[in-house]
Image 1 (spheres, rainbow, N blue to C red):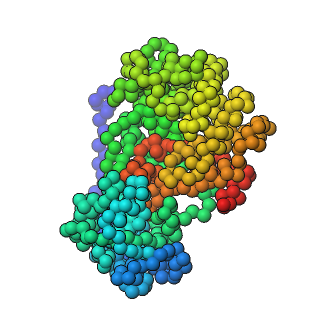
Image 2: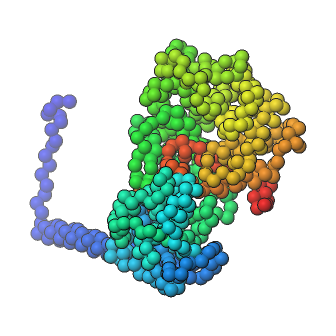
Length: 617
């Protein structure tokens, strides 16, 4: 096109009349006034919103506190206030904790001659703080003191020695007027109790009191006041929950029924947490210690691999397509940074930091990849999975069924045995490869390993990965010895599992994997002598529900999270209380694994009578 042809034609506009000029000026004035009006309106609305937010913050607190006051002063739970309050101590003590989700809870202590007087005192202090700071109370919690007694430092040291880390579930006041009283949650979340030295850590105590604007302590007194409480929490939706007052489950909400929907919510929440931990390069934020919001400075590619499994579980439950790119990114990170090939047919998963090839790492990588392919109906990672499987075979003596556990990065041998987990992980992977390919070599190798499990009586190890592998191999091999061994792996460990004080998430996976195997036996009419002579279905089902309930002690409900440094960051995921409330990707993964199987099999569990068994003594 020529320059001339591109030139726009000039069209002369007709001359404006006076009337047209006036009309145009009028329109301009109207537009200008409208713009000014909108700007002024926006400023006014912004001001009103700001003022209303101040009002709403105090109104919200008043609403939630009012709901809690009804519970505190009503006396409906007074029967839980075991023990007496020692003479010389306040007869009424109430703690009001408030939290906005962004920082550690603020705690206000009230004392008086009655519950009402103590409540009024604590409420007044909290109310003033909320009003002065326009503080948004996402959660409000109330604790009413029950038993209280003085204890010498030596007596306290003796008592503390009986507890695991973070398992002491009573409050302490360092004066008889309760000016320096701290709840159990504050003591443990603030790292104030030194469980190794069996004493109070004065450095952490002073720091905590200072940062929370509480009465400072120069020196520790000769005696402490030890007290317990019953509690309630009002959540973000203004719903009030009773908090359990028993030692084992102390401080978390009462859940009447852990049903299918409840389990699904736990899995979705915890899996969403894991998704949020995926970095741009596909690695995970490996873990954190939430008491002071500190990341764990470490990485373990084996745990990265096993965590992928949890993400696929959430996809199976929700069908959320947004998960696909996140899962792909995390898998690609594992393959690109950790999978090494030694020839065209054999690969390993290499832990670069330790320069080690771990049998279990190869196993869980295969499990994750095969789970992905099964969920998405894809063979995208088939070649990688098979090569890793061949790597596993190089570490298996098929004549004895024993595995070699750890190689150096150059594939030379390093360690014959490290942990029993590896055997189960590798065998589970071999079974998955058989399911993927139909190649008998994988099944034959898995059978050799299982023969060793039986001969060496792996029941003694109480291993969840062995349970997973037995559940998988019995889909393809109909052998009475396999069924008996798998059932024994649960039955003979039920006492230990039922009574375990920590959440110990892998026990739940062991139980649920075994339940799937048991259910398949019943559906197919498979009968072994052990079902009649050893296996206790009622106790088995009772233990499943007990663990489903007990593991909630390791779930970051608001009543736990609010005392951490950054509550919103840890809310609705799983932790390990006795290791500083540690959150690590594999901790979350194991919890997700157990609750996912519980969700998946809940209707069957109910059919077998689990809910009837749970209440039997």
